[in-house]
Length: 232
Image 1 (tube, rainbow, N blue to C red):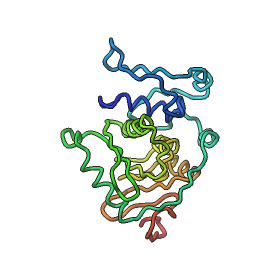
Image 2 (cartoon, rainbow, N blue to C red):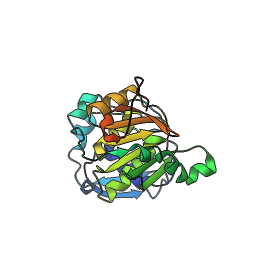
Image 3 (tube, rainbow, N blue to C red):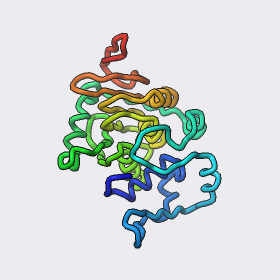
Image 4 (cartoon, helix red, strand yellow):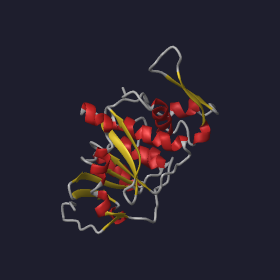
C-alpha cells in the first residue's frame, strides 16, 4: 500500500534498502507495466544474486505498517554494513527547525491531512528532497530512491527527518544510504535505538518546539545539555 507518485523512486529505494541492489549500476530499467497501472517492472543488470538473497530473507512485501522488516536480526545487518563515521556535527539550532521546514514542504498533507513525509536535509538545514506517502517507510524509500538514481549515495553529509515514529526499518534504510543522523517528531522503537547505537547513527526523537530527545551518539549534536532523563 502506497500513495501513488514517485513509483520508480519507491521501487528503487525499496530494492536498495533490502540489498537486492547495491548501486545505481545494478538497475537496468524501471518502467510501469503496460497492462497494470499499479505495477512497476524492474529489470536488474545482474540477476545471479537473487536466489541467494531471497533465501536469506523473510517476507519482503512492502507495506505501510510498522514492525520488524525482512532482515532477520541486527547481527545480519552488521555483517552487511559498517558503522557510520563522519566528522561533522549538527547544531541544535538547526535540528529544532527541521520539523517546520519539513511541514512547510508537505503539499499533499495540506490537502488531505493524512500523509507522512520524509525530508533529507544538509547539516545547515537546507532541504535537499522531500517525499510524502501514507507510509513513512515508503516516503523514506522514495527519497533514498531518488538519491540512488541520481548516483548521490552515500548521503553521508545529510540528515533524515521523518514524521511519526522512527522504526527499525527507517534506521536500516538510513544505514544503507549512509545517512548518519535520523530525527523524527515522535518516539523511536527500542529496536531502532539498538540498531542506531550499534551502527553509528545519531537518533533524535520528539523534535518539537525547541526541545528533543537524543538516544544514540549525542556527540554529533552541538550545544546540547542532557538531563538524567536524556531530554535536551
